[in-house]
Image (cartoon, rainbow, N blue to C red; front, side, top):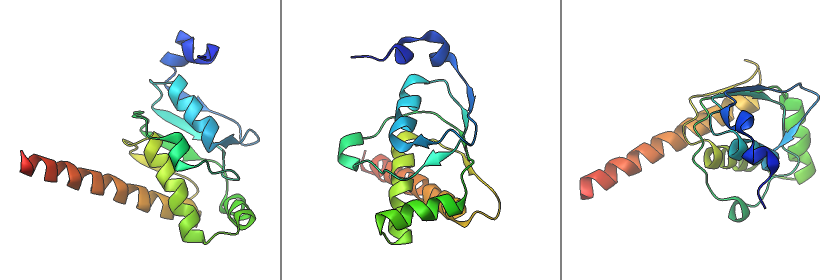
Length: 143
């Protein structure tokens, strides 16, 4: 069943979305937002990382979001990571993997300049982009 939000032309035309910090969005809801807003180019969101969906349940989409501004702090992120009892790097790479599955063309992941988790996530996400570019180059060499 298709959500009424997905069918709504106003959602499909939305280019900028800014939600208040007291309205956290899970990664699964972030996917729903991406699917409902194909024209979205900039989003400012508090991303709730307490639940990280299985990669096998989500799969990639090709959303053209350019800028994602995170409004949650490293403290919130570390609280979620500790609840999962996971290594910080593994946790961050899972988050980056999800963001890359949703937004393969992301040009900027921004947060507070002192927010180490999101700054490191951005570095890892840029590496995903470089790897994808390298793979495309390899495909072109084979042709």
